[in-house]
Structure formats: structure tokens, C-alpha cells
Image 1 (tube, rainbow, N blue to C red):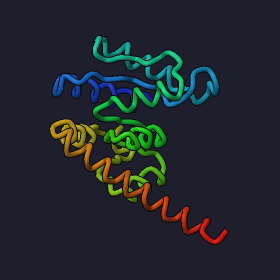
Image 2 (tube, rainbow, N blue to C red; image 1 turned 45 degrees about the vertical axis):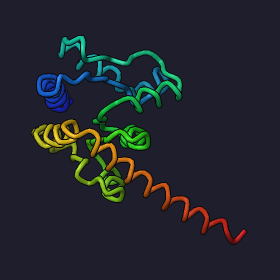
Image 3 (cartoon, rainbow, N blue to C red; image 1 turned 90 degrees about the horizontal axis):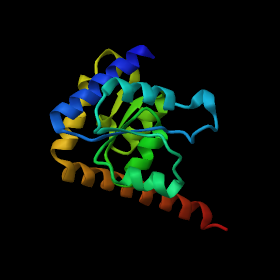
Length: 170
């Protein structure tokens, strides 16, 4: 975990320096529900190491609508949890998934966003690829938001067509 922390800390510092980005550290889990999965401890360590007021730790409980509003207001989401990435994408927010399972890469590729997934092992070795992708997205936010919305709308249409076909015989 120390290597993940070091790469994440360096990435946050690079995004702050290169883009004056406000960074929101957000847990993928509801607080105090499943403690062994809670990533808040790790996020607190990251926040403490950065020592920057523009790096915000969202450490208060959020309702689902509050969580969605927060995600929808981002310019970019970088996350290790696939579902957090998918929530951001659903709101038109470009998302880079640090994937530790095959499903992350498979889903992102299916959406046509395979260039926005990085294997976690590669990120630990170097965050250069993630920083490069983030830089591309942040340098042309409008284009990449449109790319995200196009991918999401295509997936919605595909899902609706499947559901219509599935239930049309009943």
C-alpha cells in the first residue's frame, strides 16, 4: 500500500502544480459500515501528506443525492473503485479507472474508453500514464465531456434495446 500512496501523492501534487486543480478525496464506501473495506484511513493519510487547502477530504457522511451531486460537479474522476468511475461517467464526468481486476478494463473498453483505464500495478510503478491522460482531459474538458456523454448514451441505448427485446415476448 505504501507504493500506491506514494504514486497517488505524487499524482495529486502534479495535478495541483500543473493545473491548479482542486482535488477532492472521496471514499467509495459509506462510513462505518464495512470497516475492513473503508478507504478513509488511506485518504486521510494522503490529505495529511499533501498539506494543501485545495486538496479536500470529503469525510462526512453523504446521502446518495449529495454523493451524486458531488460526482456530477467534478471535471475529472480518478478512482480505483470501478463503481465510482461508472457513477462519474454516468454524469458526463470523464473518469480514469485504476483497475485491479479484468472487469474494470473490460467495461471501460466496452464503453470505448479503454484509453482511460490504467492497471493499478502500472500506476504503482509510475503515474506518468495517468498524469498524461488526466492532462489531456483537463486541457480540453469540453471535448472529453462530450466523449463521455456519447459513450454513456450509447451504453444506455444498448441496454434499453436489450431490455426491450428481453421483455417484448411477455
